[in-house]
Image (cartoon, rainbow, N blue to C red; front, top):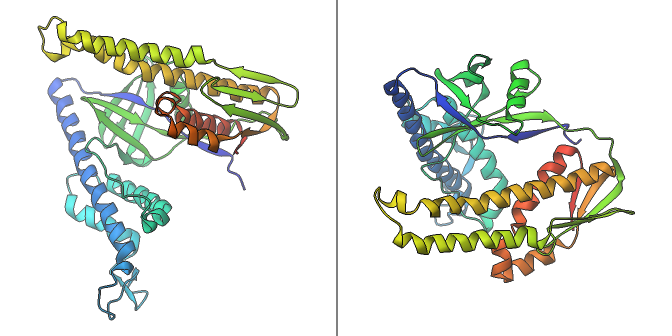
Length: 365
């Protein structure tokens, strides 16, 4: 049976809610320590999972060696001293005990085991390599570790405590649904799931995961909308009686190429820029344009996918079919220019997410 809920992830900047700079720095250093231990633990966990799974392939071991991955207390052929899920947890908890909250290690272990089991057939065939985690990875924690979430009217911020560290949100001019989702969590209308903390350039970002009900629009599954993605027109969609072209090549591609050209000019001109504060001043224009392209593409793709789903809702189309996508993927891989500038996968991801949220069945042809 299809689930009536789905999970949304948002990105919210946090500030440590303490009065002095020294106290805030102390808590930030602790978060960086947890991030480091989490990074090391993640690489250890996937390494042990891989060895456990592939031990059967070690054909050069003696015939008398047992390799059944089960608890020896429950199975005489088992080689483990405890349950399999507990083996990797004990490895990292024994090594990092006292350096990081056990809740983080427990959620990390559970997440990596689920991911490993999902990709296990590809590991066995040699079609996928093991995940390699970076030092700046986000670390998970359960919702039970977050307490006292409330909205402070005098400061116009949300405050809470995480592992007894006080935080407040920094939403700035929020034009999204972050504020509304947090208000629903406070009222008990929306469930908060396992979330993550991300540290970047001295800033703290909270990646909360909300479980919400899918939208209900009275769609009819027998009404089919057919959409086609291409570089000429980002999206062309039609039903039995209506056709809509979403975006144009001039609007999307040419603007993107213009930003790329401006970035190249800025990189050339940076050589002659007046210094004074080192590389930061000389590369000010370059750094500004470097993120302009990705921000523009992200914004346009969000608008295109939103208009596609709104079209389906307006015409009560409960089924959305994306036509001839395999052929177009092959063309994109052969043409470097198309692959670099089409943003096909990002557009597909946004369409899939918005279709699921609206209760529309998505079929890729």
